[in-house]
Image 1 (spheres, one colour):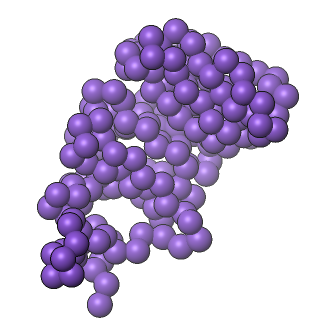
Image 2 (cartoon, one colour; image 1 turned 135 degrees about the vertical axis):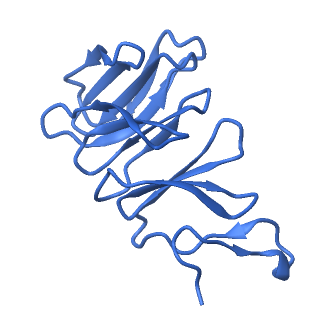
Length: 178
């Protein structure tokens, strides 16, 4: 049978590298992201956020504060923090080692999170919302450092410049803003 959530089955008997984790969700409700050092994999499914270790097939940690669909997740550049969003539109900043929620970024109005991106210097996280808003969060100060409102369409993807000085985004109508 299939292994339980958080367990893995070795692929070695089939001559394939790595492990196969059990089905985590249905209808595409699963998001994943490698840690910056490539040793861990954050997996968001079934209202849970787990940190997996693909080399051993083990689930290292499970965080359960989120509910609902699997929203975007993003590791901080140093791998110590993890940002994740759920269907309620709130973004949580976690200590990736302990699973403790360190900060809560409340949603603006009735907005749902489309994308999350850490600045390369690790000082800020940008949260893009389907309702046409981007919030820039100063993680060290635990407060909003900037905001872009009134975009002509929803925000689908955001990305910081390599020097952490500016953002580029793609709106729902395909327009790239930089």
